[in-house]
Image (tube, rainbow, N blue to C red; front, side):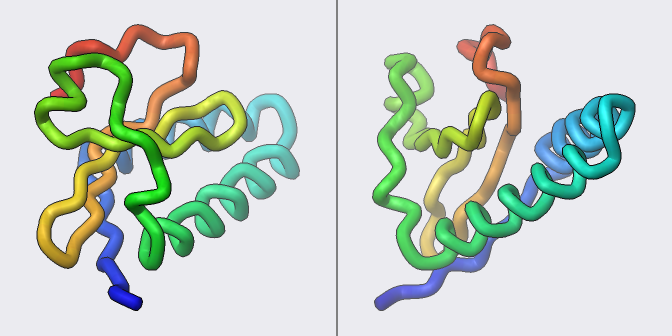
Length: 100
């Protein structure tokens, strides 16, 4: 089984930081639980990123974006060689048709 390196773009890192900061204002435990879920999902992307569907948006799909859904958040990533590049992490209700 192939193993991929999971890379997180600076923009996605910023997205995650904002999410963790927001969740910490609700409860620090919730932020910690979300972080644990994120780490579990990132581990899954190391071995099975193609299990995640291509993005529904036609333009994102054409660019090879896949989407991992975790709770209310969407992880947008591409597979590039032996790397999985997480490009954005957005709330599911947010408009996302114009990813960087």
